[in-house]
Image 1: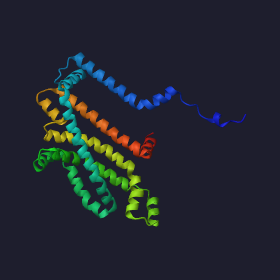
Image 2 (image 1 turned 90 degrees about the vertical axis):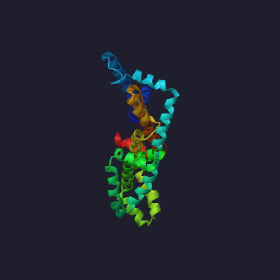
Image 3 (image 1 turned 45 degrees about the horizontal axis):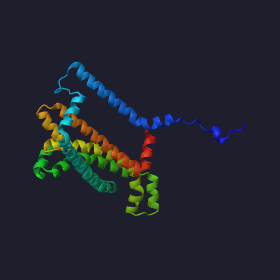
Image 4 (image 1 turned 180 degrees about the vertical axis):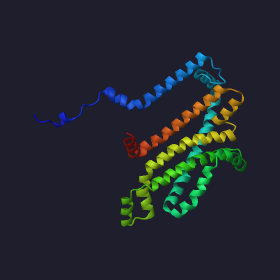
Length: 275
């Protein structure tokens, strides 16, 4: 008997299997997190560990609840610093990456200076930046920018230089202008690298904002950590750290969402490569 196209099809997964496949990326990490929190709570209660050494998750929630509405201005202040440093690093990195990728001479001249700035610990020069720029938002955004800037720049330059050679040679044969070559060939080819850099940069921006708030701030989650630990309120410090982690994950996922919405072909290629 001849096989019809339908008989050659592989068995389709059930509805439950499809649902599990679509949700397992969220369900598995969430279940793991819940188990870890329950184990943490149980160990603290079983061994009677004092809160100033390791607070139970329930105690952390209580301390955060005590702040009430006062908590959100601190979250907002840190978020503003993170986004300011991240956006400035993105706006500065792209044109500079284009210049470095287009001119080997400029790259040889500028790269050593960039490496010097990155080899110097930001926490060491942060007080100097505060003296130079003041104690306001400008100094905190600058510190955040300096931490997030270099990895993003390297990713962008790598992406611009990763265009397949045959496509570059074809563009030369067609005598495309520099702007046409950049806009139609090199920038599209660099999108996966750019978003890889953006994901790293947004995570580093959270770190940079906390470092800046350790040095100079009158509000923010970093400021909340320093103030709470100064008075041995370790549960509140743990709560601020947890909020920072949540903020970092949400901002990272926001970058992933932008990539999937506007550059779905890049996100699909990344998933295929990972699988």
